Structure formats: C-alpha cells, structure tokens
Length: 427
Image 1: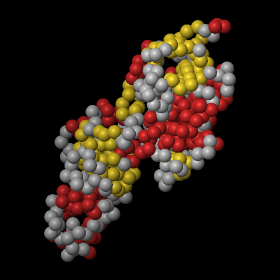
Image 2 (image 1 turned 90 degrees about the vertical axis):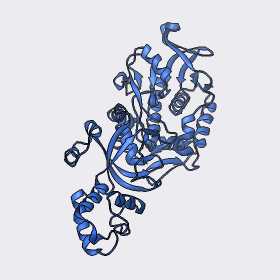
Image 3 (image 1 turned 120 degrees about the vertical axis):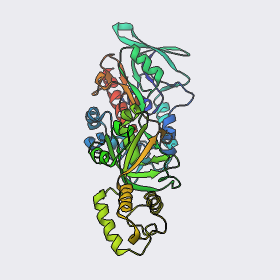
Image 4 (image 1 turned 120 degrees about the horizontal axis):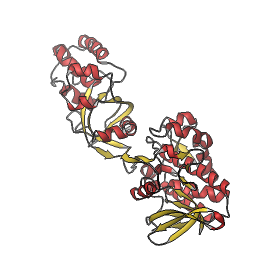
C-alpha cells in the first residue's frame, strides 16, 4: 500500500514525486515505469543537452508559446514559472545557462546532469522506482476508514494507493484506460515536425538558413491549379503564417519558422495528410511590388553585370542562384538584357515562392504530440480530474503542447509542482 502512486517515470512524474516527498516526507510514494529505463525523453532532449526551460519569466508572455493550453496555463504559471524552475535546480547545485535564443540548459551541456539530479533526489527522499511495471488497469476502490482510493494493476503486481498521478505522456494504452474511466481524450497528432519537400529551388543547398515568412495555403488552393489571380486573393486568406529562421535540409525545410507552423497547425496539417502548399517570402521586408521597384533601380545601376553574380538582395548566395535559374534567367544574362517578365518571375520567387510539401519528418528525437485529456475536465488550480477525485495529471498526458525551446518541459515542471502541493495539502 502506497499513499501516492505516480504512473510514468518521465520528467513530469519525477518532478511531481520529488515535490510531494519534500512537502510530506512521511508519505509512501512510488513511481511506476513501464520500461527498463526512466527519464528517456530527458536524456535525448536538446540533442542530449536537455533544454530545461526558457528564459521567459512573464507568465502571460510564456503562455503565448502554447498552441494548446495558452488560456489554461496562465493561472498555473503565476503559481510556478520559469524562475521557480531555475531556483529548483540551483538549490540542488545545478546552474542553468541562457543561450542567445532564450533556451536554458545545464552548464554541463549534458542531460545526464538532470537525470542524476532526479535519481539522487528520489533516492534521498525514499521514493520507490518500480521499472518494468506497465499499467494494465486503474480502478477506483474503497480503502479503510471510508477513504476512496485506487487499485493499480501492472503486468507484475497489484498496488493500492490513496492518490494517483498520471504522467505518462501520449501512451495509447493509458489513454484507453482513462477513457474507460470516463475521461474524454482528444486524439493525438504530431506537433513538432519538419516539412518534406523535393523541389529544384531548394535541392543541393542543405544547410542554407535565412529569416523568412511562411504561409500555408487554404485547402482548396493547394488542390487546384494556382493562377496569378488566385495568388492575390489567397495572400489575404492564409490558414497559417509564421516567420523566423528557415533552414533548408536534405529532405526539405526546418528551423523555427517551420516548427512554429507545425505546432500551431498540428491538427489542420494532420487533416491535410501533410500534403499542402506553402508560400515563402525569402525577403520578409519586401513585397512583390517593392522588390520590382528595387530591381528597376539595379537594372540601371548594374546594367553590364550578370544577374547570377550580382546578388541584389540579402539572401544566401546558393539560394539566390537557384531562384535566378528558376526564373528562366541564364548564367550569362546581364541586368540590361533581362525582360520585365523575367524580373517579375524572380521577384515572385523571392517574395511568393510556392513549394509543395509532401509529408513530414520528426524533429530530432523530440517527438511531441498534440492531444490528451480534454482541458475542460481538469481543475487547473490543482490539476485534479473533475471526473475522478483523487486522480491528478501532469505533463503531456493533458491536451497541452508547446513550440520547441524548453516550453514543453516547463509545462511538466509547473503541472508537477501544482499537483504535488495539492496532494500534500490533502494529507
């Protein structure tokens, strides 16, 4: 018999268990992990460096990084935010450093530092870690002294406890058990992924990176022939828009601009079966008309120079060469010789470059899903189930997810802390 059982030996599970044990040292607490190792996602996070959180310390600004959960997380972040996470690790001798993009990592640049911290704290606080303990059943039962509790059946043993915390991420088996208990589950779809794209304009230039604006077309537009007329209409009705660094890869497109689209458009892009068209403005500071004006000036000033060698705008040279060639301008064409139609083609390639996306790829090892327990069924003051008293949730098991940058972990830390306080106060 345990007082509290935490199902899931990941970031949220450990953080919850540690804070419960700190608040109430006499409680018997166990973490059930289905696999042979705990904290697997922590290990691979941030390329093995562990992107612990993000240097955004204003709760309202922090919520803006969550496509699902923005409204619900405002209160929790006022209770426990990024600064509290930094404090937790500093108290345990782990200093976090801030990178130029706001991501925060342990100074050691190793996720093992975080794993060792959690394992050391669990050992110090007497938390039992039970591996190879895949849960097969969760049942509400009556305990002694008229208390309500839980029976947790695993492939090896049956356990009883007064409070249960579900911190299993997007485990299909656990989701089915929660549905059986009466919870509504929002179906899972990938949330952080890169775009697959085979196109001559970006082939042969992997590693090229530049700041760009990206739009996802209306569904009906990507299925039909795109005419110039449709372009002008569609520019007002993009389903999704993002901007930021865009990275050309061997398989297509990545970088923050794409990852933001993948997070905010997780359900929409899933509905489109990851086949759609995007429009890229490689020069966000220019419109088509503005760029045509610039080209008219360059045509006068650089008349005798070849277009290919005269990189007229701030884009990477390899990209410029590909886009010039795509505009039917040859290597020998001088600015004076280029027709208005060719210049228009080049201006469109630079400001309205249409690319066909055909599938997705997982972003590194950081597989994040949108979906989970319907947010309306959770009390965000305690993270307790509104349907099943005594059951709490932390981490990605709920329908909250974030863009890349340490935000998904912060959701886990915040939820884990609030669950821990609620459970500690109930004993």
